[in-house]
Length: 299
Ligand code: KIV
Image (cartoon, rainbow, N blue to C red; front, side, top):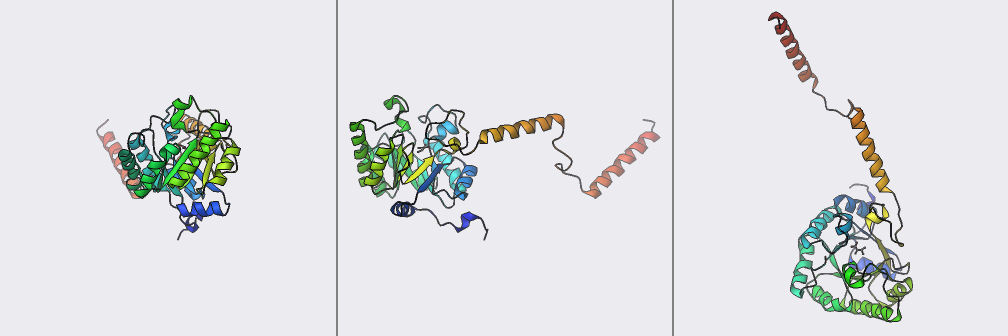
C-alpha cells in the first residue's frame, strides 16, 4: 500500500457531510475541472469536489456560465472522476439541462451518475425546484441545491448582485432553503448573501450548507480552484482569498523555457537520449569506411 495521506482517508459520502454538520466540523469544497486538478484537490483532503459550471468561464473562456452544454460538462466530470478517490464528487447541471421538463432533467442528471461517475448533481433555484429534487431522489439521484446569487439567473438578476438584502428577500431565501431541505437536498450551496441570512438558514435546515460569499457561519465553504490560485485573469470578488499566485509561477516558467530554447541551453546533453555504445561504434565504423572509400575514389 502506498503511504500517501489519501490512502488513509475514508470515502466521503452524504452521511459524512451530515455527520460533520452535527459535529460542527467544517466541510471543505473546491471546484475541479480536469484530472490533474481533481488529483491535487482530492489528495489535499478536500471533502467535496464540485465540477462547477463555472468551468464555462475558467476553462472555456465564456463570459458567463450560460453557454456550457451537457456534453461539455460530462467530458469534464469524467476526467475529474478519474482523479478523485476520496472526495464526494458533484456535477453541476448546466443551464437548460433541467429547465425544460422533468423527464429531460432526470435523464440529464442520470447521465452524470451513469456515464460521468458523479455521486450527486447540483442545480440552481429555490422552492420552484423542490418537486424536481424529490423526483430526482425517487430516481436515486442525490441532489444539492444552490440559492442566493445563482449565476444561471444572471439576466433575471440584472448582473451578479448580492441577494437577500431586503426583508422580503430574506423571507424568500429562508422559504427557498426550507422547501429544498424538505424536498431532500443533501447539501445547500448559499452564494452571495449576507452572512446573517446564511447563519439563519444554516441554523434552520437539517441539510449541510456550503457558503461562497455567504460568511463564516455556513457548515462549509466552497471556492473556485482558479480563484484561489489567481488563474482567472480578472480582479477577485470580495469573498475570494488568494492562496497562491500560480499565474506568475506559470508565466515565469514559460518565459524561462522560451529563453532556454532560444539560447540553445535547452535541451542539454543530459536531457537528450543517446545511442547504445555498440550502435554508436558501428555507425562510426560505417562513417570511417565511407570517408576511406571517398579518398580512394578521389571525392
Ligand atoms: O459553478 C460553480 O463553480 C459553483 C460554485 C462556485 C458554487 O456553482
